[in-house]
Length: 243
Image (cartoon, rainbow, N blue to C red; front, top):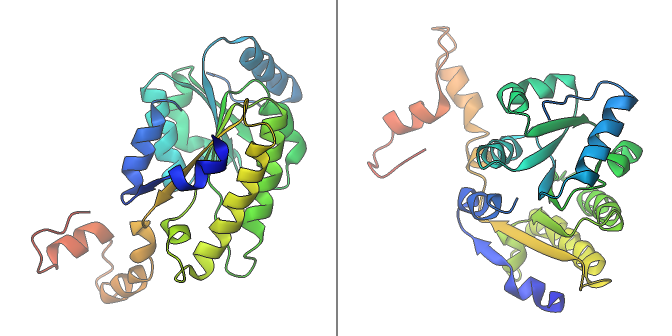
């Protein structure tokens, strides 16, 4: 039952394993006008297949989720920030399995219309240390709308820091608040609402984010462009390092 959902959440040390575990459950249409949006809504409502709405689709994690879902033949809608972000999914859009909707955190009306008819919502929100409460507010608003539109399951990307008592830090705090609000929404109608929480141990791109400055400076005089992953592999003393 959902009251035990927090205790039953999977603690995933490797985020990508978490994405793969979920992706199996998780059209040529790019909406440019209001009529296009309406066509997508009608198509989703009339479909008897499982389909997924991906919120936060254009980031490193979200784009991999989209790619994997399309490869597995799952009808998916990608919620992207702007027209440029659609270029990330040209091949996927061409399959007819992927639709895209342009919207932001404040495009609530667009989201509310297009989430209708979907079975599952994959949601990933970037946190901000300057506005730590923003993550939970965004997830609460969009999660509430999803459940009200009869989405049966929400899959939330949280953090392993939520599980570490006393060592949560700002990341743990933001995700704890988010989990609590989503759990409260799900428990209001636990017979029809399901919540899955993925708890990645770390995003490796975050670990190496600051290293980019050092590497760029190191090679600036030679005007060379290198891959960060290649640099660390070639300059590591550990043969076990894999990127």
